[in-house]
Image (cartoon, rainbow, N blue to C red; front, top):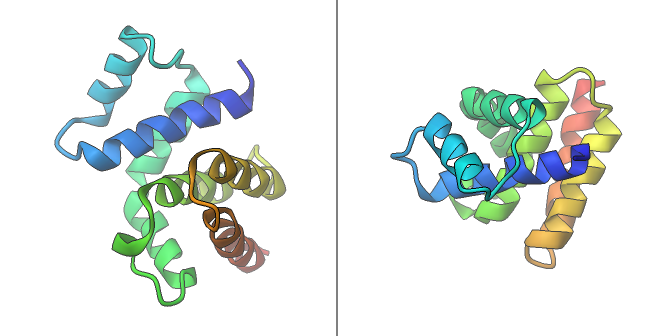
Length: 132
């Protein structure tokens, strides 16, 4: 399985979690693997759990750069994509920032509304500039 496919699986589970706050993430992951909704891998688990463990910090970054937007107004798809990408950019040193941004935009093009990819790209570009 490619990193792109693994990232997509982590995205799907994060998106699912946004509708099922009461379910523990470990349970959601195990259920998805058991029912073959995802293949699962160490990278999927690392990305998923690192994102969720740091979601408050990640959301504060999103709010900082999403000028005029509150987290609650951002689509659940774009929010899940942003959370994953910012997690990669801030907590996973082995992934180049440009790859994280590109992969996030591609996920948006596949799953989100038409304008979400530009919105996500803009926020991630600002996060990237700050990191430098």
